[in-house]
Image (cartoon, helix red, strand yellow):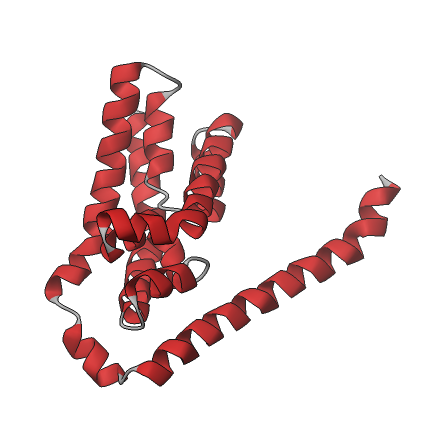
Length: 188
């Protein structure tokens, strides 16, 4: 019990340092992209199909998970399907699933989405080479506006900074209400 209070200051310091480093990463990725391109030109280059990327990747994630887990019978497939809709947004996915379904589901939500983010961070270049730069956006999901922004820009070039931000923002706004709706649907 005393260890928790003794270490709390260190935990807070590490948390604050992590937040500062994340902001620094976002700033440097944006600055790098901004130095190499004109924002107006970048906006003009974004084709309307790019706006579809977050929705197509979300649908693909949920459908793929549904097929795999329904066919294989592994685990609690409905909970895993909801977790797959988290699109890398593990903090909110785990909280919503914990509250809506229970502790095990919250754990699924966290784990599935943390692994998704980690795989994107480590394998972004390989994903880009095999499937194209848009696949990095699909793999990164909501995290392409922060944590996986740099790998997305590195895989697709400076012009992908804006695409990655749009992808991340759209999914960050879409995921929470979708998760709540999916939990209500499977709880019927």
